Image 1 (cartoon, one colour):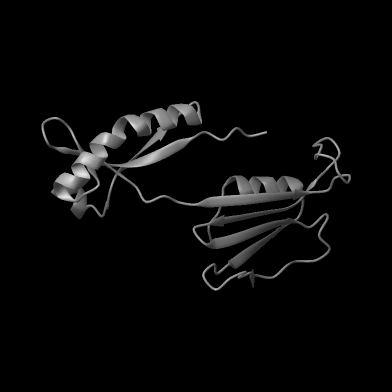
Image 2 (cartoon, rainbow, N blue to C red; image 1 turned 45 degrees about the horizontal axis):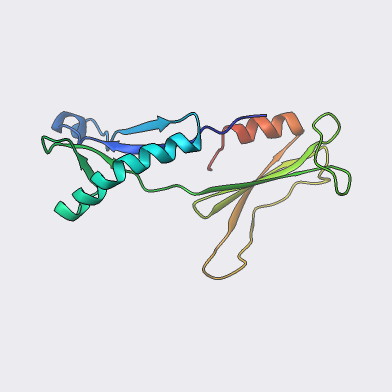
Length: 160
């Protein structure tokens, strides 16, 4: 089983002119933590500086005590996923006997479905699931030959 590592990205100090001409748009720093508690503690520590600087110049930049921009919070990316398995009724899945049938995930409103063709009888075509007009749900489908291919494919988290 994979352990999810809590993290967030921060936008680093503004690029130099040389970086701008190289085609590089921005640099982000990924801050990873051993626990959600550690992540929350760091965010709580820097939030007062963020609020103060937002008020000061209406930017999202965090300044050092010398007033130079260091970093900026990146826009959040929303990822949701669901894994459907074969299992006995009212039981938790057991990896020694149960297989993954489908993995569905959505990243910022774009859905993906990864199927296991050993269990699903035929390929599934792309579709749209829109439960409400304000929540459009286009889905791109990836039909994989077996559970191993399905898990390898999903672990790269392709986004089309």
